Image (cartoon, rainbow, N blue to C red; front, side):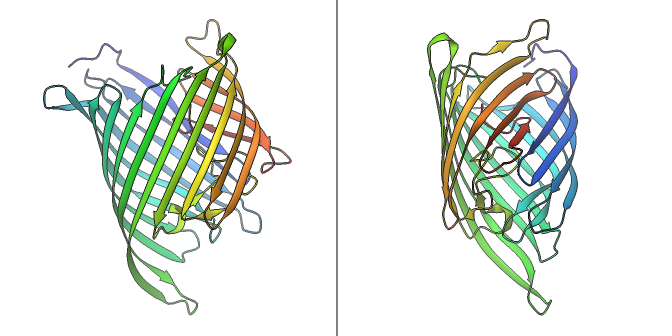
Length: 330
């Protein structure tokens, strides 16, 4: 199959920031590599973490990836997509106030089982270690997800629905450092189930009311795998009143009142949409969190989606947060 898309390169960005951390990545990708819609690319990222009561930390990482939207066809009319990614990334472990370094790779196969439904299977293997050096983990895993996309468009939808459910499991093999500074080996299995639903209602004069609900729980989760409301990318509760809440499960909901989409003239497709939001969530063993504010969602063809917002109470006094790239919900 050949895709009627030009052979071209594109700049990509990824980032996010809020109360105590900032992440930014810059990279590029080449589109339609072999004439079948393939993509290849990479990115360099930096992650800064400055929690209250802890020292300033930073991490440099990056990734490389290859995607093929039509790797092969299953049966008569079920195309299978494929993606390979190797990365060195970081995430926050709020339990001990550390920045974890993650290195590893994953392979994702996606099967279109219905016009709006895709089944995703992703085996992975990662190594995790915090800057504190208190532990190290080898983590083989498998994730199976089902995605149903009934939105009128993926970018700035006005109506429709979206649903994603996933089950992931695997094992931790590693060691921790005890009070006597001795390493103790351990191994344990883990399991997690995440569910996300979105619903969009079109209002008069081009306005949109958008809802998002999230339910997740896990067993034997370790370090940064544990749920929390905040984070620099796609936080469950923006401007969270309780950003350090962590626990084995979460229930969260969001609502946005979105203004009509503004298309910028002579910009080759740049779009803006202003919105007001209200978020709330509960982390098991971590407590309630909430936040509210305003923001603008921008689509810039060469850069993708960028979100910039201002809210509280968790981000006071400055109040600003942002994230960029494919993260977040549209």
